[in-house]
Length: 135
Ligand code: HEM
Image (tube, rainbow, N blue to C red; front, side, top):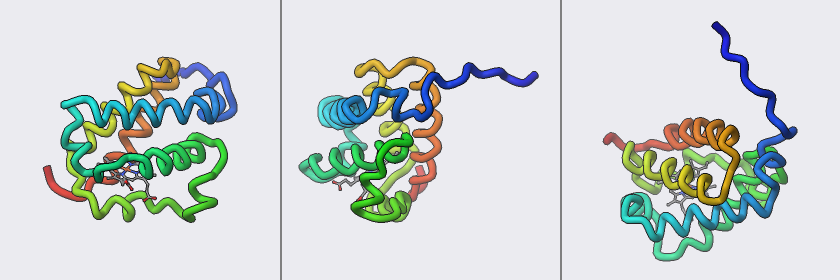
């Protein structure tokens, strides 16, 4: 039987999540958690000592990816995310930690459960496509 989903309450996930301020809050929480939680140590280790550039770039990217302003594309061109991640060794562990860290951040900044569930699936698809090593 076909699953009937509730219609989304906003035109874009960007509007639904609460716009730029909320995307900023989410990205900040994501990188704070990555820095703090021992469970994300392997993910943290793929990054350099400072996270300021990553914070800014992920914020710009997510605004557009969620259907809002295309800050990232305007400044850096096509995201080519898989190619841009090739310098970092990404396997199942790093993928799972990225998605778990993002999911925890979504929970902590209060992303609505229905949106959180949808975004979880999209983040998992995107993160899975970034894998570039076995294991
Ligand atoms: C799967 C596990 C992932 C790992 C281990 C990872 C790791 C990294 C690292 C180390 C950087 C460089 C940060 C810096 O420049 O300081 C980066 C950049 C970036 N990541 Fe990821 N990432 C992952 C998944 C994702 C996902 C799922 C997204 C989007 C939904 C994403 C979006 C970005 C963006 C937009 C950049 C900036 C790219 C650039 O312009 O250089 N990443 N990532």
